[in-house]
Every structure is written in structure tokens, then in C-alpha cells.
Length: 368
Image (cartoon, rainbow, N blue to C red; front, top):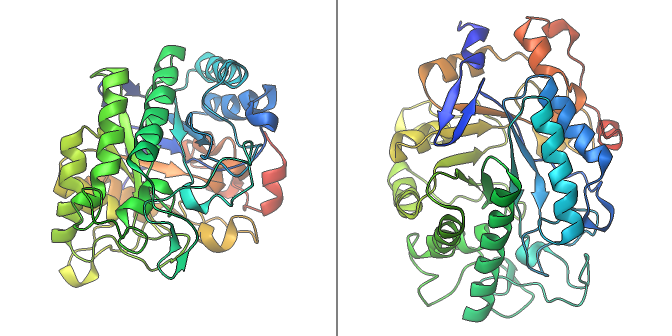
């Protein structure tokens, strides 16, 4: 069994220097009326930074594009008031000695038409498909594609200008970037569709635009997943060779770190390969880049079944520590356990696992 000290080793990525391997996972809270994060949001993140979280990835925030979100209480990462709110969040985290990156999140066709802060804006997607068997709109035009790419780049530029430590691009869970990745929702016949390499083009162009806006030393993270909210068993890659074809173009485009979203971190990604590596492990092995693992860390229920509908009991992390010590991945993202236990790093670091409390959905209503 590996020592808990494994979790508290420092880590460095370009301009980012972390005291430990603990990451706060992005979790939607819908606690920013008018898309503006307030003092309570600053306190929420600041409290976790003060307790020793190495890197905070914010809840998903809307890049500068009117079709990005279906919820006016989800914070934006553009506009004077929203950016002022985020500057206050940053100050709270930095005052506590922490590091923080915004996650930029465009929902694409998952955003229901007529919803969100700009209800008149059309919902968009690569092929007008909400899922493989449901057409709900028209395919994005090249102008649509260019506008979304520009929105991501602008918001990433705002993050750098304010002083954030990097940016995470949300390319997982069936949202707009993942709608391009997944052949189930990408039926395009142009350069953005067809082969798995072509289906990464939209993401690659976003990464390139963000890089051009922010410079060479600003860390760019990309979150991706095999599963989709439209289909929990969907796969982008069914074997390591297909995963290599997916990761290679993204690595070449300038991604600095992959955040590999799984429902249960301990599950082997390709059992038939004879390896017990999870998705983050395979991604690191193939790409050579650092990775973040995530998925039910410290809990006994995955978030699909437990996030908003039922609770989850605490669970040990011995397996996680062994995988981390082996070098399968570099950082560990923790979600619901950090909502229930804002001081999770302090308790775990001191070996007080018996003082951790279970997660209950009601915790979502208690902001800090």
C-alpha cells in the first residue's frame, strides 16, 4: 500500500507550480445570478484553497458566445460584471495560497432552445443531432464554427489577463466539442467529420486559438470522456490504437494536460488489452503528457447516480494511491467529496479518514 505522502508531492507544468496532486473537479452549482459570481462563490473556492487543494478547476463557465449556456445562474467568463466577479474569486483563492483555472463550457445542442441568459440565440451542433437518432437542428456553418472558436479564445484571454493559472477546455460529456468528437452526433462530410482525426479538428482549432491568445507558457487543459450524457456506454476509442489516433492530433495542437473523465477511476479502460490502466493511465502512456484522473474518488457511488439524486458514502483511497505512485497519472480530481468536506486535504493528509462525512445532495444547496 502506498503512502498518503504520494498525494502531497509537488507538481509543475510550465508556469504552474502546485504544492500537491489534489485538484478540485469542476462541478455545476448554478449559484451565480445573472451569470455573475458573487462573494459567496469567492468564499466557496477560497475555503477549499485554504484547506490545501492544490489546483481548483472552476465550475463550467460560459465562453463568449450567446448559445453557450441554458442557465442564467451559470457564471459567464466574459462581460464586465462577470469578469469583476471572477477577479474577486481569484483574489480569494490566491490569498489562501491556492491556484485556479476556469473551465470553459459550451453546451452546444444540449442547451435547450429558448433557455439560458440569451433565449433567442439558436442552439448549435456539428450535425443538428442531439443524439444519434434525434435531429433537432441544422448543422453548424463555418461562420458558426469560427464564432465559437473565437469565443473560447476571447474568454481564455480574459483568464490570462485577470491572472488565472491556466484554462481548461470542456471537451467531455456530450457537450459541443464532444459532439464533434463523437461519430454518433457528428455526421459531417467536410474537414470536421468522418475519421476520428477529422473529428478532433474543431477542438484542435480551439486549442490553437487559445494558444495564440494566451502565449506559450499558459497551461491549456482539455477534458474529455468516453461516455456521454446521451449514452453512458458510448466510446470514442474501443482500443489503445484508436485512442492514439484521437490523442495524437490534440497533442500536436498544443494541449498541455488531459483531464480524463470517468465515472469510476479504478476501472480498466481496455480490459481486453490485459492492462489495468484507466483512461488517464492510457492517455499518459500514449501521449506522453501529464494527466488528471477523476471519478468517484473517496466515495462508493459514481456521480451519474448520486450527484443530484442520492448520497454516497465515504470510501478508501488505497487503490488510488497505488495507481498514483505507479505513475499512471499525475493529478487527482475530487468532486463531491470536496463539497461534503471542504477540508478534505487537511483530513486526509493527517490520516483522519474517520472524520470525513458522506456526500448528500443537500450539500449542493450549502454554498460554502
